[in-house]
Length: 190
Length: 269
Length: 70
Image (cartoon, rainbow over all chains, first blue to last red):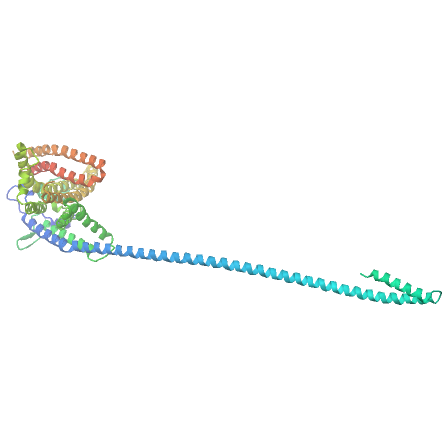
């Protein structure tokens, strides 16, 4: 214990001279002069330090903090407003873009529609054309074939008639027979 | 912590008490002297407390920071507690005028009280009558001065001739009030702090000291060590309790000062 | 004679502490009741409680001083 408390004991030596009078309890209640002076001095220093320096500094700090908070709030408000305006802007833009897209799609659909109609008409016309041409051609062919057959038949009948005339048939009867035949042939025409 | 048993020799199986309780609190030996002022241990501790208070405040508030550090937050909440809760909360809107006094007093007493529990110091400054008496005299001067300067002589008449009391009893109540205002208030304010810290110091010295004494004499009688440990544990319990007392007494001293000033500012209440 | 005087002072302090002990108990108990009933008035109740304790405690403190003086 002695060595543990040695540093304290250096400061805390009890008075070595024996007290002249028996120490009384009331001594505890009476302030020692040296301590009173020291306490006054120390308290005065603390008081003036607190009064002249600490409280103004604290005030300044609180004020600065309040200002900073106010400034931040205002900045936040501004940012919020800006964001809101940006948002409406974007919304408007998005709505415009949607309209534009709709319009484009519509237009494309209309174009496609018209293109389709045109194509169909043209195709129909072409088909009709082709059909007509084919029919014409076929008709021409038939006529030509009919002409050829008629000539052939005439020639054949002439030959037959010559043979018959060479026998007993006069020219008149012969002509009549030919005409009848041709008429019959004509009924064959399409 | 056991400065009292200085002369005790544990090897000799003598458990000695100080011849007088005053010896526990009084340091007569001057370490050095400047002029008439003897720097005894107590005086040095008083200046140490002052340096600690001023240093802590300076350290906490030296930079004009907007967001304080941990220590800054603690000191700031202390300052705002004394100023807002104690000064303005008790005295009213004009309480901030007294805030420097109350704050300086609170911090000085707090550090002085906590010296009781600080290792290698272990001595509450406020257990010397000088500090509580000085502060209580200041409070006394302030509240009497404020009472007279704010209300004139009606302050005194309001105390010794209270209108709210029936006429027959007025002189008695007035006498009691007078004694209570002008005699008991300053005395009890000082003695409350002083007595609490004296009792705390005595208790700690007794418990930890005797625990240590018992424990140190383990070589002689083993039983003593067995007794010493519970003593020591009990002392540590009291140690925690004394921390609460130290803070609470600083608060109560400051609060009562504020209340006394308030009764002078608004004597009707 | 000296020892007897000291012992009597001790008894006197003990007696002086009885009344304030009861009184402080009553003060704090009622203050806690008030705080529990009206928590919004807790600050006023606390201040008044400390004031009441201070006045009650004064008697015990006088006893304490007298113990040292005797």
